[in-house]
Image 1 (cartoon, helix red, strand yellow):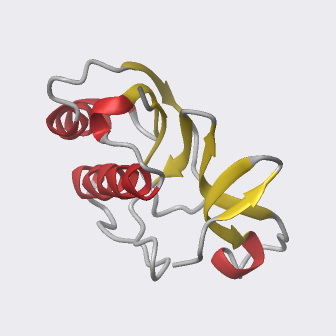
Image 2 (image 1 turned 180 degrees about the vertical axis):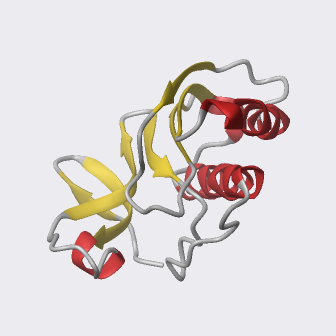
Length: 142
């Protein structure tokens, strides 16, 4: 795990460069998995990927990919000093509308009692063809 950095007055959680995480693509962008700005935590879209190894998990299984995405969100919130109960907004991207029930059932287990708002979108594709779902999150630490 990369150590957090402070840039522009905000804490950047798990900084990385896209040339390392997407070697098959010609990219060179400095990004991070989450940003803490004041008491707000912005979590980059999470997919079925192990954040430590960059390996895709749950290939072909949208529920397993959603489970990993939500586990990543919980881990990143924790690293940022927040908890799942601090979630205020989720944006959910799926590549097939038939995945909606499996995805939302899984997310529902992770957000039971939290009541965040959410927006769901059906998109034609995600960054890699094996990814079926992506979830980004915003949390506010009280």
